Length: 595
Ligand SMILES: *[C@@H]1O[C@H](CO)[C@@H](O)[C@H](O)[C@H]1NC(C)=O
Ligand SMILES: *[C@@H]1O[C@H](CO)[C@@H](O)[C@H](O)[C@H]1NC(C)=O
Ligand SMILES: *[C@@H]1O[C@H](CO)[C@@H](O)[C@H](O)[C@H]1NC(C)=O
Image 1 (cartoon, rainbow, N blue to C red):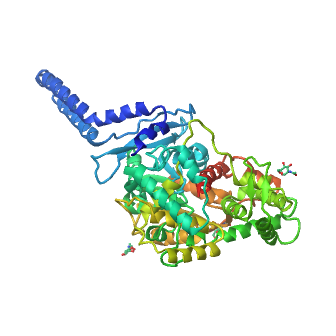
Image 2 (cartoon, protein in one colour):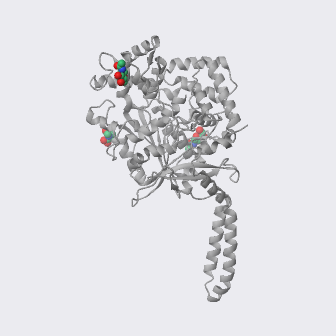
Image 3 (cartoon, protein in one colour):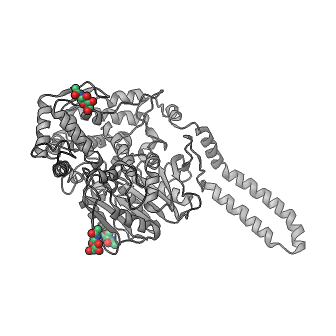
């Protein structure tokens, strides 16, 4: 019994009937065009008699040609996206959908709608084209990203591109993957946190069975290759001849997939916070790199926590609450040990809960993505040290939404659907070996290691096998150079991965922010990178050589004058914009909270 068809309309906005009508219109476009051609022919025949007599038969030929061209275009798909005002009433944006084939190998077959939102170039400004963005995840919503970060991104790149965020297939407004019959069941499932490997295995088995039962047709069509083909269709529908794109985190895999599948369509493409494409496509996204047998993606995660401690110590007690005495790293360790022995009931927190060492470890993992939050994290740790865990729990847990009816936003299922689709079908499950690997990973990678295990087990039970999977080669010669951005100490997309992508893509340029922690370039403000990005989007200029000396302009614990860089949105390329960082981390946090 599949309730997919019933639950879906709940998610679609109230415009869905209208949208469906448009789809119907698209389906019948061929018929309409044929009718129109017949009418034109009839008119032409009549006019022809008259006009030939007048000696202007060229016009007839012209009319016939136009009628024919239109009919051909309408036959397979709509060529444009019908943009209209958004339901939210926010006039800054336009909303639209594009109908794409469920299976790109069968262009005449079943279709799905890709939902998207656009921030158009301001009226009267120069427009160079459109630019697509992706927040990563995988499974993050591009629509949410353009809502939160569209203006900041537009500002940095010079205001000359329409910024378009789309929900990748299986996500948000694009045929979201629904494994649970309703939001209550999903919430109940998410509220259990198994700790033993055996129970994680059984729980992922249950998830897989539910997805097989309820999510049905989208499962084999969620690979990144399919999304890259969707991007090509969006780009062409918007009238662009090349793809302009800024992809963060997993968005770098989407970017690398696109530029290697369609190197002749590469315009201005930035990959920012880069994932190693070889490890991604040969393993299972978040699990051990099949070559090195390490969790290479977490190479610098522990360094992120160390960086938090050392920058705090440098800033001193006035700016960092944890820096009251001696070694901050040791103090964090001591707090963790104390929380393990004596967890704290946080009764006054917004979501009351017990704070223990596992809570702290998970929170630290999330917080190393976003240095902007380090001062408040230090405050929370200092208070927890004095047995008040209110702030710590507030950072850790936000209240569940209580919309009625409950709104189901699947996040971990799209993440699994996309990352499992991109890797090979996992070999048969060997529990002993897996338990051994998981124990090793948890010990070696205290921050993020447990997430890896979950993702790996999830892929073993994932019921979809991608019909099309792109697994390289990753070294195409692109029409225009790709710009690659990396923070030196990115906790989850290490600089080493950016170097691998850079070595593969001829002509690409690598820009490294030397002193930067946090995930992706917006996590620490830098005028230096902003200037490079703006020049690139203005006319395709890339630096003559790789740039390895960009720095962030402020420490997260900077003096008040500088900390304003972190605190408020900025308005010029000279003043980096933190709204992008905030929008990105909001999206990533949501995914991580589910894990
Ligand atoms: C605990 O910390 C919270 C948040 O900082 C604060 O509002 C509250 O007054 C503190 N409680 C006690 C008992 O000190
Ligand atoms: C790209 O990589 C493939 C396989 O990894 C290799 O065979 C090919 O020669 C490379 N092409 C270029 C242009 O380097
Ligand atoms: C980085 O190095 C280049 C080349 O050595 C130099 O021209 C530039 O001024 C440096 N930039 C910064 C921000 O230090």
